[in-house]
Length: 431
Image 1 (tube, helix red, strand yellow):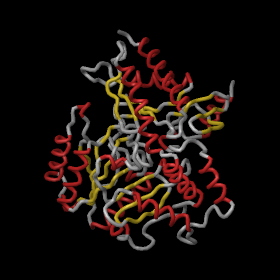
Image 2 (cartoon, rainbow, N blue to C red; image 1 turned 45 degrees about the vertical axis):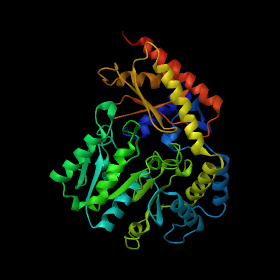
Image 3 (cartoon, helix red, strand yellow; image 1 turned 135 degrees about the vertical axis):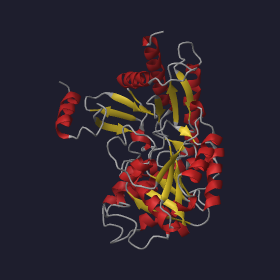
């Protein structure tokens, strides 16, 4: 019995079954590589689900955390505030794509950022309702699940959920939903199901993460902005997965030129340390009373130090430009593979920057989901030393999230493994 098998037995005995995992028990990681407890090497195309955009253990991030740890690791910002928190807030205020002066607050997880954005939207507008979109993912708390537009595995059996949450279709031309259809459905929702005067905010991802890496068309985001302005509704950009240079810009919304009122971020913000933020228009951020926002661990000093270092790395190493370069290489390789005979299972390739995914189908005419093929490709790639993640409401999308610091040779190696895995699975598929 190897170390992996031993740990798997211990996990089954000690850890709740609802905490789903893979059988890759990490021992060490460096940049885009990870080694397990049995010495197997993997190229990590998950980045801890878009967290280690600057790679595992970036030297500047590790140095910043080590320096901070020598001073203090926790005081609670509410009790004894510290300069690093203020510095990071100033930096995010300057770069977030919101209109006018901005302010920031920090919490710990993406779900917490979403919860606080909802609180801010409600208290600043005096309205209770929130409209989210099918396929969206906004966290695993009760509010996060209510906003999320994907039942399995996130919502099944966990209700009832908070009231005054509504959903509209998200545009996805591959699935036959146009921008106009989505906006028309939203207008119908506002006419038939919820009075727009009761709606505090729309919340939307610029690129749906769990929904299958589906980009929000610029036309759609412009339409949302117009509807929001027409009815006095706020626009919340959930940048938890798409933000921090992943799409080739610091924030996914920047591709559209549309400015949201509030922005949530987490994942790639602190290079692997737990930190999330809400940045928004100053007048909205100041609407809550003192003590209404925050938390004991909110803006932990070590995570704050890591985040300030991450912003330095993104700028110093031009990771926005690098994300675009990585994405172009991945997309070009996938398009080349998809053109071959026998690769008709690749239905669509999509996503901006280094947030690329491809959807697997039984055929390109019916576009029926091929969930089993998707699982098979992920498993074959893992066997060959490449960590992949699946997503999508139909469980048939493979998302590619390499570190933005990945060396070219490791990127090429990973794409070779991906191609070989696709070929193996395609050859096993009945004709």
